[in-house]
Amino acid sequence: MRKALVVVTLVSLVAFALQFVFAAVGAFTKPASEGAYALHSVTGMAVIPVLILLTTLFAVLAKAPGRLIGLAILPLGLVVLQALIAMLANASTDTAGASTPFGLAIGGLHALNGIIAVHVVVSVHQAARRLADPTPAGASAVVGEREPA
Image (cartoon, rainbow, N blue to C red):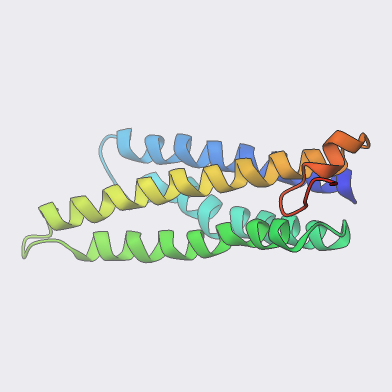
């Protein structure tokens, strides 16, 4: 199970990297359209949540420390926050439907929250690798475990 945890965290990292690529595809598509962000939306609202749930399940099955399990589920909350931030940013337009400074600032928070989520997933992946490492040094360095006295 521990190796499966490492694999699913690596796949999650790839999915998060692709999220940034898909966001750029949407931003640079000309002419701009709602469909330009389709890959970004599907990945963020379906693929990534499934990977987060699998990561959490594998962490539980691998008997990971509670702190690692909590860290594994944290990106799901950040994904929900992402959707809320995107909705607020999209709703913050003027009467003509154009972006407002407030809406753009909220949109910036969407990017910042995405970066935070990536850092959490990197931490989970690193902890999963340490958990799967059969050496005593790797086993004792797992998130939430104390070094032997």
